[in-house]
Image (cartoon, rainbow over the protein chains, first blue to last red):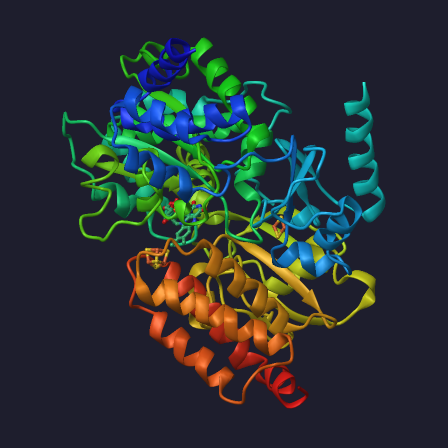
Length: 158
Length: 406
Ligand SMILES: Cc1cc2nc3c(=O)[nH]c(=O)nc-3n(C[C@H](O)[C@H](O)[C@H](O)COP(=O)(O)O)c2cc1C
Ligand code: SF4
Ligand code: FES
């Protein structure tokens, strides 16, 4: 396991003139693998890239897309910036919170969903917008949101 | 109308063009740089700095390492132009980067892509591979002896990383905190080496300039300066989206002709002309030419060209509150005026909008804006203070009403 991580990170580092540049890609790799960036993971990265642990922790905690604690399997990221909220009468955030029964920053009890408020997603022309994990959804309505969440639930039944 | 940025679009990622690159390789690097300088191309990332002048800050004819960075961090609220170039015409960007690299003597380039653009992170490397396969990128490009490589680096969620020195820090595996200048990236950039940073759209203008000449580029604007401009138009319009128009097109034309006018037949109230960080215009101020100099003269900015249109139903204090929340969340926290000032402005506006404001709150916000303005390491300070102060100055009665009716 450890050896495998070492290989992967070393391969990431080869792409760059200086290996410190592999830190952010390495943290993203951990998050992809585990769903979040664990303390243990950060410690391994520090050893492999030969960086002080404090450097790894401070970088990891700076970026809003890196999760330092476990999140739901599906992270619903709702844009609450100016344009998305100009066009929705009732903010989507509130609607989704109510329908899932959790607030922003929380995880549903079944571990399936978490909700995050995010800044402008570069979809202002197609507002309102959200991402679920890496998937992008634009021109949302309450109905389409229900459909999207419903189809995720269905896919999880199988 | 002449389209510049969409010149190569052929659907998907099919390779066409690269004619400008072929021409470039038959010229001397300094001739290429001179063409870009004469075209009057100004940076499309927001600052509008002349590209030709920026290239001159790099070491000339040096054999040392020079890095090229494409700023694809696009985080300015209201902006979605770079995304569409990368989605629909990634080869235009790649070609522009190779030409710039040839002109300034860079061997390695990075595209710093905002973390949220995951779908672009999937296919941009494919476009890069295609270009390499065709000999248009990589070793010994088209047999010229010139080699240049591009790698995609994905950010992880931070608005400040769009600021070029924060972006460099981030590429070095650090938190994205802007650097104090001088030294500038042109001499001390990535890993301390000379580095040229341009926005996606800036690089994408270069192939046209080389292929058709600086005069054709100038002629594509309505002011005789600066080519076309991509405007991302959003908010209360009938046809929101991305439009390429001559630099200097009037804001009225963009709203009423390009974007089809105000939705639902409502009245226009205000427009943010160049992304959330640019000062707001009232409905009676939209007969203005959308170019760097004219907008500066009316105390706002062309910025990223992200036009946010607001109809009569919009509450400006609420927009100010949303903006303040954004800046308070995104401040990197290095400078006390920015860190504390944005937090205080957010608190005051929250309380005003919630009907709990105190009489002095409005003046207090204005004082904080003045306090932040000009006293910070990076231009984020201006990005907060100028637009919020403008909203208060131009729509003061709406803010005062909140204080009276509480
Ligand atoms: C807070 C802040 C955020 C910025 N965000 C971006 C951005 O998302 N994209 C961008 O190209 N430039 C951004 N810039 C401007 C860059 O610092 C830099 O000027 C630009 O990348 C230079 O490219 P250009 O010469 O092509 O305009 C930002 C600046 C500041 C102060
Ligand atoms: S102005 Fe704000 S964002 Fe810029 S360096 Fe200072 S604290 Fe960071
Ligand atoms: S404001 Fe929501 S995507 Fe830009």
